[in-house]
Image 1: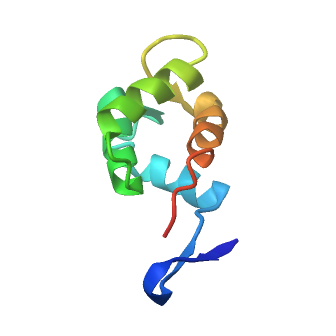
Image 2 (image 1 turned 90 degrees about the vertical axis):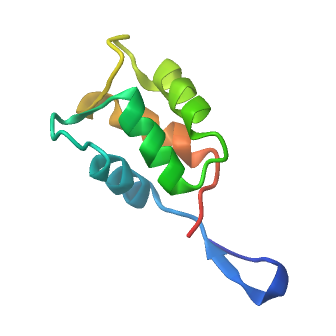
Amino acid sequence: MCAVVPRGKITVLLTEDQIRGIFRKYDRDGDRRLSKAELKEAFKHLGSHFPWWRAARALSRADANKDGYISEEELTSLVNYALKFGYKV
């Protein structure tokens, strides 16, 4: 999906797979789960204006077992949460 924005620039919405890849990239310690700090960095990369807040909200929405991390099993919920905000390239 493309949208024309002012000054002739074209932006493209990130796909589900692209967002999933970005989150996986920010699993800095390789434990296959995302901490709040890792989420904050991922949301910063995505362009969130308040990545610390978005990370906290994402944890509250996608962390099904409430252990403070987003596991591989919870990643789809996290990606669906992030897709709602229309992050673009």
